[in-house]
Amino acid sequence: MSQTSLLSEVKDKNHVFSFMQSQASPALNVDKDILLYLEGLSVSFDGFKAINELNLYIRDGELRCIIGPNGAGKTTMMDIITGKTQPDSGSAWFGQTINLLELDEPAIAQAGIGRKFQKPTVFEFLSVEENLILAMPDERSVISLLLAKLNGEQRDRIEEVLIQVGLKEQALIRAGSLSHGQKQWLEIGMLLMQKPRLLLVDEPVAGMTHQEMDRTAELLISLSGSHSVVVVEHDMDFVRQLAGKDRTVTVLHQGSVLAEGSMDQVQNNRKVIEVYLGE
Ligand SMILES: Nc1ncnc2c1ncn2[C@@H]1O[C@H](COP(=O)(O)OP(=O)(O)OP(=O)(O)O)[C@@H](O)[C@H]1O
Image (cartoon, rainbow, N blue to C red; front, side, top):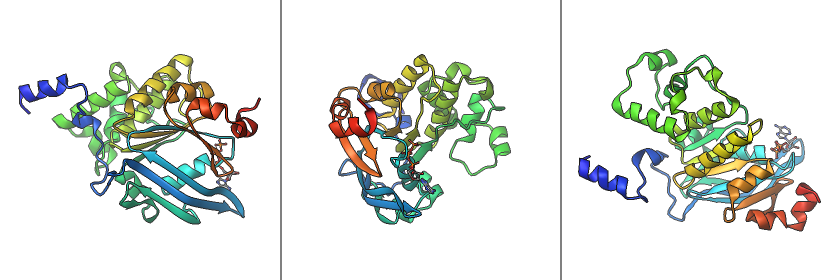
C-alpha cells in the first residue's frame, strides 16, 4: 500500500482496517444484516426442557447482553451455538448460508465463532506474546510455533491485538503474573487472533475490580461494530454499562426469551422483576 493511500485510510475515521475485519468463512452471508439466527430451538435433559422454543436474532456488529436467573438456559444456548450440544428441534444459522447444526465444534470455530468461558485459560508459564502466538490460526505444533520466526504480518497482528486488549506493556511478562482482569483480556486477545465474526463471552467480569470492569466494558464495546458480541452476565451494573441507553438486552427464563429491549425497558418489565431482578 502506498504512503498516500495509507494516510487517507488513517484520516477516514469510518474506515475499517484490515486487522479489524474478521476472516470468517467466505461462505458467510449477512446481506440481511443478521449474523445469528436461532429459531424454535428446544433441548431437553432427562425430560427437563432446558431450552424451550427459543428464538433469538443477533445483528451483524451488535453487542447483545443476555441475562436471566440461574438455570434459564444461557449456557445451554451457547453450547448449541458452538456445537457442544445438539438441540432436539429448531434451527441455528450463522448468516443465511451456514447451518450450525450441520457442523462440529472445530468447524464452527473455523466458520468464525469464538467463545470465551468464564474462567481464563491462558498458558501461565508463557509470556503474553507467546500466548497470542499460540492462538494464531496455524496448524503447526506448539514448539514449532514458539521457535518459528514470525513474518511481518503476524508481528503486526500480535501488536494490534496487544494494543486492542491493553496489554502492550505486558507483552513480554509471564501470563501467570498478570492480574485476573488482565488474564481475561489476554484470553479475549487470544480469541481475536482467530479473527472471529461472533464472540460469545460468558460472565467476563466475575472476580474483577471496578477499574477492570470499566476497562472490560470499553474493550467489548470497542469490539462491537467489527464483531458481533454476545455477553452473558449476572452483574447488573456491568450490563447497564454495556447496554447504555440504546443496545438490546435479552432476558432468558425457562429456556425462552422472557423480555427483550433497552436496559430501562427490561428493568421496568413486571415479568422480569418477578422472576429475576426482584423488588
Ligand atoms: N448436560 C446436562 N445434563 C442435564 N441437565 C443439564 C445439562 N446442562 C444443563 N442442564 C440443566 O439445564 C438447565 C439450564 O442450565 P444452564 O446452565 O443452561 O442455565 P444458565 O442460565 O446458564 O444458568 P447459570 O446462570 O446458573 O449459569 C439447568 O436446570 C441445568 O441443570
